[in-house]
Image (cartoon, rainbow, N blue to C red):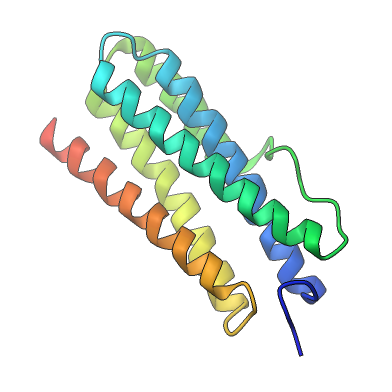
Length: 153
């Protein structure tokens, strides 16, 4: 029987993937926040999002460590999130808050879909409660970003 300290390899790989995408998201939100000096509320919001994503990664790293495995400690250098943050930097440099939020929503779509995929893949897993809780936070931030984007249209 699978427990939090005895996860199967498939579940551990999925958790490792979520660690990486949370690290990517953390770095991306921090990077965008640094460039939003003219939008202090948005800057603060992005920093909050970054802090949450780091907390997600840390919680998942503890699960991996409890399984006597080395948790991922860096994000990916490829994929949707990376492209999203490269594009968001350009939008930030142009000072277009709507464009920044549109790009942020695209990135949030990527992490939200990753959680949905992992939740399907690991249904009934011993880490399901943690993943469900984190997914709820990711979805909430996605919806907040979409609402802020729509308000600036």
